[in-house]
Amino acid sequence: MAQEKFMYLLGSPKLRILAKALTPAFLRFGGTEQDFMQFRPQREPFSSNDHSSLHHPGHSCDRFELPPLLEKRLKQEWALQASVLQQEELLGKFDRKNFSESAVDLLYAFANCSGLDLIFGLNALLRTPDNVWDSQNAELLMNYCDSRQYIMSWELGNEPNSYEKKAGVRVDGYQLGQDFLHLHKVLQKSRIYRSSGLYGPDVGQPRNHRKDLLTGFLETASNAIDACTWHHYYVNGRDTSLEDFKDPEVLDRLAVKTNEVLETVHSVSPGKRVWLGETSSAYGGGALGLSDTFVAGFMWLDKLGLAAKLGLDVVIRQVLIGSGTYHLVDDNLDPLPDYWLSVLYKRLVGPEVLKVEVASNSKQKRLLRVYLHCTNRKSSSYRQGSVTLFALNLSKNQATLSLPALFSNSTVEAYVLQSAEPGVDGLQSRAARLNGVLLKMVDEQTLPPLQGTDLRPGEHLKLPGLSFAFYVVKQARAPVC
Image (cartoon, rainbow, N blue to C red; front, top):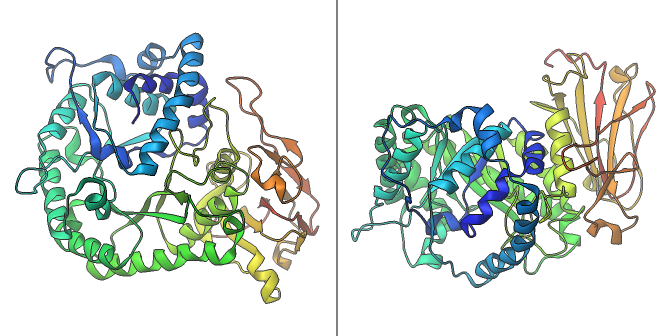
């Protein structure tokens, strides 16, 4: 979290419109900085009977709308603030920050008015001399949120495996579990939060000591959490390359790490849901000139497909807006390529995963990655039984795909995403084209229509080199869809 004044950017009508297009979704307020934040009330003591109108969308959304001149000024100042936060990330030194009721109000109003389900990450590094989590500040925050009737879920701490490195504090799996059990008891005292979600432990991707941490945590507190969360990044943002972002061996690492986590969770707590609670391309704030460009879409789309295939229930992208270079919208609140990709995925892809594979020689098979789902059933544009194939072409050459014979009589709607600029150099463009049309907002409050192109029944699917696409098979008549 930066200076509190930048929270007012969450009142931007433009940002709310961009967020609404990604719903239904969770909004996670968390990350490294959450373990250096404390709630410091600035107003008069509040009462549980002092209900605000903030939870009524018709009032709060207008009340917290950011005036255009203030938005312009804050965006200009944010560009400088973001560089300060990035420097903190590079040095691994984080200043302690306070936040007031105003920050909470702004955050909740943004989530509520955008249709997002808020998950609030609590500071786990507030500890007693006995190295037990001190819940006093969290309870102060919860009492305020309860008084405002703010509906949200909760997390405690971010990447506990790195506490020693960033704060000189070591917490083992057992103690971490005890901390979550304590938080669970605190939540049970609240009329509003006794039934709210609790997710954790937001551990980094598996390495030997992290496996022990996760195992000890689950043995102690698996019954306290609604889903087990872990984090994944493919590469170090400081020493990665363009080639890494489209290397099938790098992309395959997600499956290895996911299977390790699933094996641990299922051995200790069978049936526990597993979420990818924070993820992007490169850790360390992202990779400059890569994580916010078109080439990042290969990692992002493949992760969405592979995570669903492996059984991860939820994938939370780092970040919508914030510091670093892996955000979905830029400092001017303009959408980046991964934003458009995310919107198309939400619109076209349903949760049901179907089996599909590439029948080709080994080299082509590695460079062409395909996934098949039921089409999003909430879409009014497609009938029941439709399926959505999405594919990534990591090769420079065009790939031709032939659908199975049972789909030969169906029309197909194609959504082909390419960089705004041609060739390998164009992969580092911060703009994208959909079926040849440059993607940009129509105006400050209107998204483009994102229209597909109809293909004739039986027509081969031609996927340009270094691109990815969604193909909706409209008359697939898949019984499970």
